[in-house]
Length: 235
Image (cartoon, rainbow, N blue to C red; front, side, top):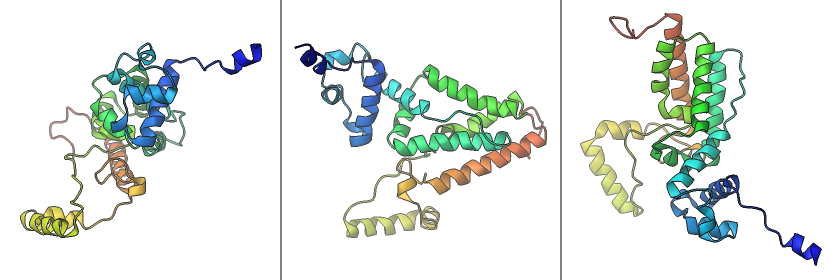
């Protein structure tokens, strides 16, 4: 009887277990399909049990962001600040590739939990330890934008093309007549969907290309002792 009771004992529900299960569910079926009901089914509990650990779906999504950000390797590596920052951000990139839904959730958040603030503080610390001024680092963080989280935020969303080949071809020709330069650059490069985050052009090559340009530019400004108070701005 005692052995049967032990075997039937469930793993206690905790906030960590709820959040990890939610992340796994989003990985499996997409974040759009995530609901408190489906999450309770995955954990084999009644839905009301979840509300002891997360007040609502928005708080659940906040917690899922915490899980993703905690996966970023924040151990300092690299011979200089630029290498260390690159490795840190590429680690964030790997987290985004493991959880391709995460970028849209991060973009939708309205508040930053402690783990997010800790990550930002540690990233800022790499620039400051490398000798960049607080003034320059302020602008550096703005320039990095969403890249600090491992993805590039698109200026405008790119809708998927029509499935019908004839409709797609007709739409392409119409857009090409109206916006020739957009079509010119859109067809000039190729992208690997296996290494993409989001629905735009943010594949691994594009991400690292932009990151390298930014880091090289930050280094140049640092070497020039740039300040935002310079009369003629960046040159």
